[in-house]
Image (cartoon, rainbow, N blue to C red):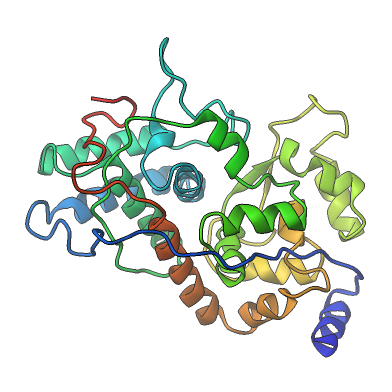
Length: 327
């Protein structure tokens, strides 16, 4: 381990860096999900989802990361049940205005378009939760990442949890103990967490989410911090929505550069840099730098496990006609 850290320091000519551990959790119930769930009832679902997703990413490459993030933020609250997609009404409070989501999650219109396309192929058959899971997989693949067989058969929630969204989704400023407990609560191991964090090899983050890291933390490359400060004023409320790439080099390509940035102390978020800070996940980060295929394999494993978090199946939930509202 000491040799690994020393070589990383030489490579980046920088010192200390931060880590992000994750305790192992128990696996979630998945009994009724299967990769062939729609093989007879809606075999055209995959082409319908992919065509709309591909077109959306062609219009704006960032959208792939946004759809993947929707899946993460949905699954961490009540499981993968499309609760995040529900709009607020006068009598219903959804999750969109919770702190981790408000002004941040995006791509809902793309999911609407996918739902419309799927409904034309097989009306009333495919849940919004399954549409989101397929679109997340396709987004990764379209941007150069791995492919996998998605387990399907989820139904859509008729409820949402504003408090769950506020409390269950790891904030970008999280310390190690909080990150550990939040991932463990979802049944995701430390290995899963490090691999799933690689989702930040694509996409952008808002100034409000990395301001504290680039101004206050010491485990960050000085030149990198100054570059990010130039478009993110120190004062809260000024430039909050200014964007910066989560992966310094290739924010629209799904590969392993995210981890290369961490060993150079160029993680954009405090929670990113925690993955490599002289602690127990340093070696895993280094292994992904050495082998992109190892990262891809572990990312797929993590995505499948995350997709298994407390799904609604059988007679539970519903198949929403409109992903934004309950039938």
